[in-house]
Amino acid sequence: MAEEKESKKPIIKKKALTKKKKLWFPIIAPEVFGKAVIGETLVEDTKHMVGKTIQLSLMNLTGDMKRQNVNITFAVETIVEGKGQCKVIGYDIAPTSIKRLVRRGRMRVDTSFICQSKDGVKVRIKPFLLTAHETNKSILTALRKYATAFVATYASKNDYDAIIKDIVSGRLQMGIKEAVHTIYPIRICEIRMLTLEKESVVATAQPVNFIDPDAIMQKSSQKRAPKPEMRQEQPAQ
Image 1 (tube, rainbow, N blue to C red):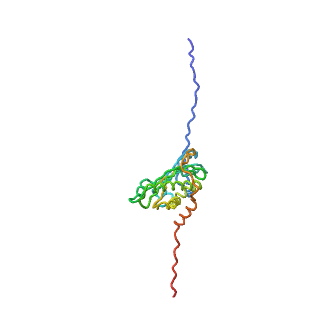
Image 2: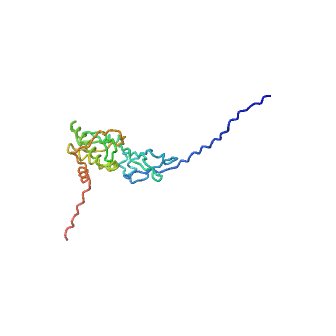
């Protein structure tokens, strides 16, 4: 009787897959918001935090109820001591809030362009202007062009973080309003939106030499500052 040869396959022991436990790690806002903790994320490793985004209302960041219609978008850029350090990648105002500002007898001016900051960051900025009265198209065109030139020149002289700070505080909006008031009186100026662009994107708005943003911003800040109260003298007895 012929012996049957059984082919024996080697037994391979499979290793048990060990899934790493996920942990909560904090997300930190940039310096303009005081490096406050703005959220947490559940990940297996801190390296997975990079690129994660979070959107918050400006009201939640500043405590100002009037800014609840403004949203700030953050993205985790680096990890420091197990904490995700963020940068601002977006700023936008709710469209419904813009619509409520427009009234009969006023005209809106919208513009959108890409400019470059002093530290080489490409940003798309969308200012919104509302005139005090009705006017003609040539005035609206002049307002649009001058506002674009002013912001592009301002951006070329300031770092990206400084631009974000001035938008959040309203300083840039006041500067735009001051810059264009010689063309036509403006009732409201807002930044509808700001977004980061890729480095390869070409800037569509360039700085000009005939605008001095620093002087204009300083002048607008002086107008915004509260006037000192006059001290009343007591009558002599």
